[in-house]
Amino acid sequence: MILETPLLRRVLILADETADWKVAGLRQLDRLVLSIQQIAAEQRRPVSVCVWWKPEVNADRRCLPADARLSDVQVTDAAKEFLREENTVDLVLSTRLCLFHNGLKDMLEGLSGSAIVMPESGVRWQDQLAAFENTMAAAVTLQQGTPWQVLSSRSEIRDCERALLRHSGKTQDGLVSRYLNRPISRAISRQLLKTQLQPSTWSVLIFALPFCAAFAFLQGTYLGFIVGCAIFQLYSILDGCDGEISRAKFLQTEFGRRLDSFCDFVGNMMLAICLGFGLAWQAHGPQALGWIYIVEGFAAAVLIGLGEGIVFLRRTRGENAPTKKRWNGMLYQRHHEFLEKSGILFLGENFAWWLVALTKRDMAMLAFLIFAIVAQPEWSLHLLLLVSAISSALAGNAFLRPSTAVVPQEAS
Image (cartoon, rainbow, N blue to C red; front, top):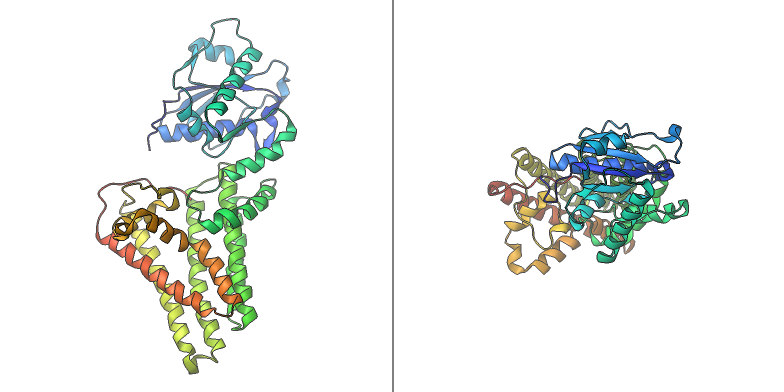
């Protein structure tokens, strides 16, 4: 995707002792340069970055980023040569600036796109820092809730980490995720960010939870259904941590997205099948009417697999959602066209928004736990079958009707 924001070519970073401060497990200077890398990759043009160190910073502390992900950014600390080549820069940043997820993109869209002319001689580092701080103060005045924070002391890092994780959520979050799951997962992620744990490793570690829940379901008891649904609710909460870690540390990868989707897919199928067997044992086994639950569980699993298979085929055909609606943020790109061609929008966008919100995975997991507590676990299976059938039908309808436009797939 080509950015609609002004082209970024040359960036000057004012670095002082804050360059080595770690926020959410990532060095401040590295966070700035990785943010620039994101912009460079999207605009498909390299960016030259000059780190201008404060004169008082010792030479042995002047460490430049050396990350393999910086494929589109050339970093130097030769400030005089950098400014001698061309006395204009497109953006001036400071290592005191902590950027949240997509914060630099929002900054470029909100600030003036004109180049900054640097004095040919006599410019002082401290004067340039004062100019940067004035620009940031003006930006905050014009735009409340800016996705960044200017740090003045180490004591502010803790609050900055909380704010950074608040901005690391996804617009696709459902109501339960937004108001229940995310506050818990962020508190856990904040501790995980202090470690070297990779997001994909966390995805694999918590994948043991669906197996524990499946074992609980197979007991076919009241307590077993409660424990199983509670474990799936816990899995839904912890499943948000890998994305929060990856966005906070710029570790988003296609492999991580596919691994997360695969684990969710397998977990949903296990939920359907094991819930069906558990209900059968509760109904005194398949020899009674329990076989109906087994068939229902397998049917739900097949429909879940069918829906995901259609999504995969559409992705290989290069098809995605062609348009954006007011409720665009609630949906992943792959789901847009399902609603566009379903006819549901005939009932109004408000109805479509609430339909999506009430049938999302986070809402379903909480509802399943409530059904288990009130001793009605069979309703979880009935609703799972109904929702998976509708989702597969919408996916099939979209698959049979080719797109008229292509929108890039958004990483989770």
